[in-house]
Amino acid sequence: MIQNGADTTFQKEIQVKSTDRVREHGEVLTAKREVEAMLDLVKNESERIDSRFLEPACGDGNFLVAILERKLKTVVTRYKTKKVDFEVNLLSALASIYGIDLLEDNIQLAIERMFEIACSCYKDSLKSAPDEDFKDIMRFILKKNILQGDSLNGIDKIIFTQWTLVGYQFKREEFSFSQLNQQAEIMNTPLFASLTNDKGENVFLPQPLKEYPLTYYRKLGEL
Image 1 (cartoon, rainbow, N blue to C red):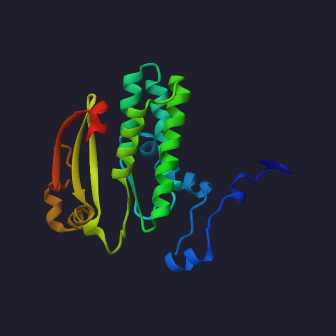
Image 2: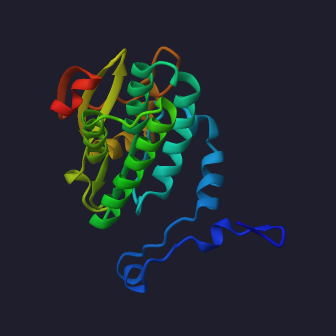
């Protein structure tokens, strides 16, 4: 909304749902203007379909939604003329975004917001709504990626699924959040400096808790 030459779009955003939630959980939601400004600092990565993002205190999904919208713009630009390519890359975009929050209602709302955005993008691009099987696949991925938990004190209980797209198939591996923390710690030790890939970049490869065979993207819902 434009009023007196000023953009007041962001003034109506709710950043505090209740004083009780602020007092008990320190919950203050980030406004869209700040979200977009922060993502602009990593603009190329935020628009790359398979770049992975984790928001460890995601609230009801303001960052997750903004990242998804950027990724889907790339999907539409590249793949809207071929349904199978569009579908598998839309799933890849969803599968690259992760979130954790203490509050169950936030998790449910974040999942629903992302699901609705993906469905709307699908319908606008392919001129038909996604079928129920594809909706089930999107929800399956979102429920594996957007999790209720304590990202400070409960990391051993949080299990993430890493999705790797290979052609039209997904490789699925499960890791604990504590393994990701271990990765960060190792990368800051002198020992880690000797562990490099063929490009001379530091790498750390945790072992998955569980691995699944390559699965055709349209079969993911059967899991």
